[in-house]
Length: 247
Ligand code: PTJ
Image (cartoon, rainbow, N blue to C red; front, side, top):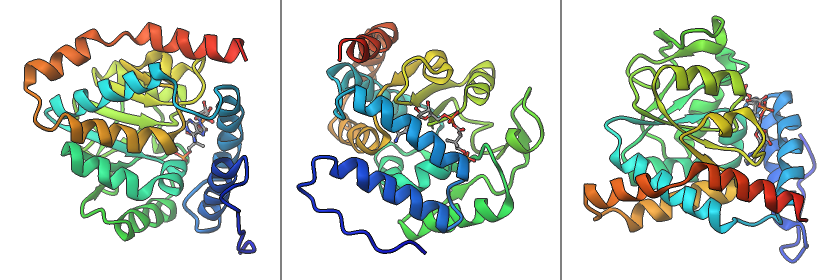
């Protein structure tokens, strides 16, 4: 157990320290992998360069993501050890706002971590957590990493894959899924292969996609399709890269 850390809310890097603390707790609870700590450090450095705020271009991506999730026949939100530690309740809220399923899908899959994450999500209000059946495979990925549920990610037409490694993002893309990727690094392979890349911290991105989904709840299919059609993925990637270069 770590000592309980009291982070004063007026600390200039409050959000970043809180995020770090949640990841640390995730590791202690057996939810987050040690590699997840490294991923967090990488993400933090990009967030710092992006000004630790949602760029207007990322907000546009978050609105397009909401529209795409609402249009989906079967949307699935993929949850790994970092996502579970950082935004468990927020992920449940997004699933409720869009009618999406939640599936635990791990890079470093072990049955213990799968169970710990599913329990953690249930504690945060999830009623149906997929990923434990593991009765289907993502083609092209070796055994453990490729395990998915047949009635979950395997069947989905739209998948939200936050903080994903490039191989799996590519393999899911090759299965014909429409991918929404959340990743702070605009140069990373996963957002570069996504139909909708969201270059933002997951802590800000998931609640904002939910807010857009609630706002679009009564929109017609035509309106939702227009939002997706007008979305410019290249502009989002270029804008984030420019923001980092112009720091
Ligand atoms: O829980 P598991 O076993 O599925 O493992 C998950 C990790 C994240 C360890 C695994 O997928 C991995 O190794 O990922 P990578 O290749 O390190 O990529 C993680 C990406 O997420 C990097 O590009 C980071 O910049 C980005 N990232 C890290 N923290 C955040 C983030 N993006 C958005 N919000 C964050 N808070």
